[in-house]
Image (cartoon, rainbow, N blue to C red; front, side):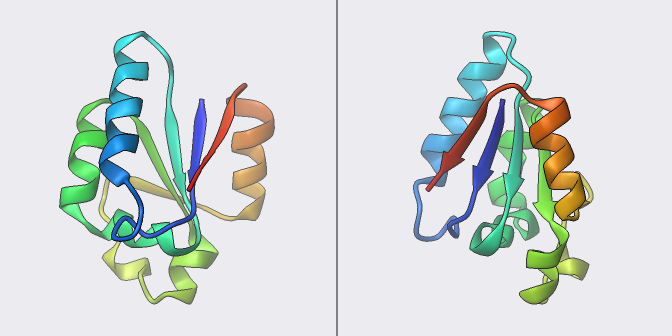
Length: 102
């Protein structure tokens, strides 16, 4: 499952997402989270990423959106950046289910 986040963790219910993802991983589902737009702020925060990463979730951020917000140098080590081509690859080749989380 690929979950695509677009809203900042400061105005969305990021904790609910983390709980949902943790339960899916516990059930044996492969989960990845792609941060786009204002959600890219989360990939600079240890607090936001700690539970996702410790659950074994693949964490991605859209490079262009991070760059537009001046966040590229602040991205944590456990986060992989992808460009638009990489995003398409995640959707078309790596994950059967796509969830847009707002």
